Image 1 (spheres, one colour):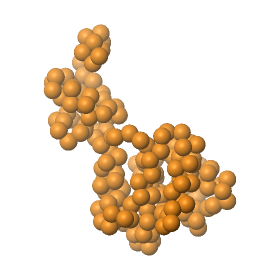
Image 2 (tube, rainbow, N blue to C red; image 1 turned 45 degrees about the vertical axis):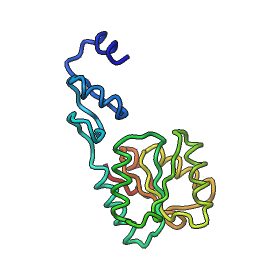
Image 3 (cartoon, helix red, strand yellow; image 1 turned 135 degrees about the horizontal axis):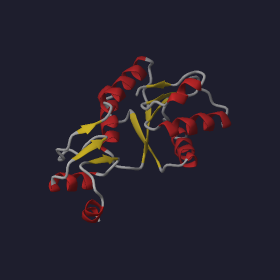
Length: 178
């Protein structure tokens, strides 16, 4: 299908956005001019541009550690993107104990974010902070917490690795990075 797409489309170069490793690898092997918007898979030698998710997550982890958090929920979509792996690596560098980070996998809808969060907070030893990896997750978390009469940071601390212009319209402004 990729060969057909390339034959049918006149392009000097391709931007690979949120492409899994198999697609990146195919472009790499075929030597098709491309730029990855995101992180490349480890074996791929295509130039890429992205924020440093690992460094941001490490910084978020050290901030949470300074504030005495010992259980951190890492909210991620159910995709296998290298940037998400980098985020988890950074957070685990800040918290080397494998029991500290609780991966929370969501399937893309606000309802599923709420369900995943609800299940996680019912654990015997639930997280006291959540690190969100998508801006849309932030809205789902905030509205779910309001429905459940929970507040930030009294009941749960929240950091998002992403940034959007509309974050400036929230009070208090969420802790965020890019």
